[in-house]
Length: 294
Image (tube, rainbow, N blue to C red; front, side):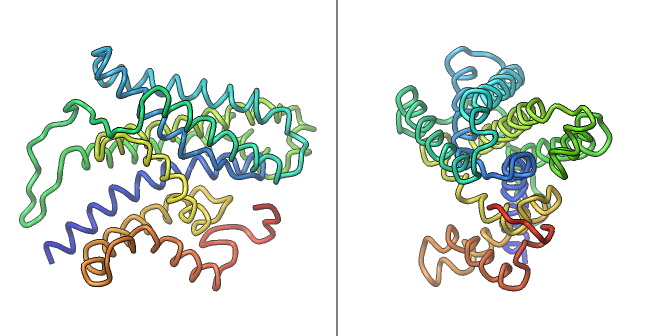
């Protein structure tokens, strides 16, 4: 029972980070109807920037973290303005292909600057594990979970109660109607990309503190993609629920099935889950019917 609870707790922490990164996918899809397949590279660059500020320039972690968020917001806005703005009336497939090219460009940029070797953050969180009976919780996992929950709550309040959140929801529901009442669709796109890049940075910094930073971190974009599809491409709640679900199932798979069936199953299981769920609910657990563009 202790091992089971340990796997579930680890899955909840990892799943919370999945949910946060998936939120970036959903925001951009709701605004533009297209998937940002460069999301994993935003995660990677955010983690590298914070690591550089902490390890090279000796900036305290909290200030380095805040500077990283500012950097990634600006990066997301610049990408929207330079790469995506010219494609605002283009077919959805053109936008998706542009994000694939952007993914390669950002990955190459990161590799040229930071290389391919795994780099570790200096100790940021306390190292003494927290014991709860048979369960041992690493402080980095606990703090990562707390930070993610705070971020999800803040974004939830922003979307539901602020004027900006109302404008983003209006654009997501009907761009023509939103424009007709004075909402700048282009500005909403710009802010949406900034937010999506911000949550990617938070996920990257937390994952970097847990596992270190290297080029493979960008693959979280592919790992989280089944989370987004499972929850529903247009559902923020779906992204959160599916993130926790996939994180828990992945860790249970690693703990119980991989020793029997061999390694690699942990990475495959999200796609198996998505296939099974979509056979029953084609639009995901919380997605709305009538989604035409993927």
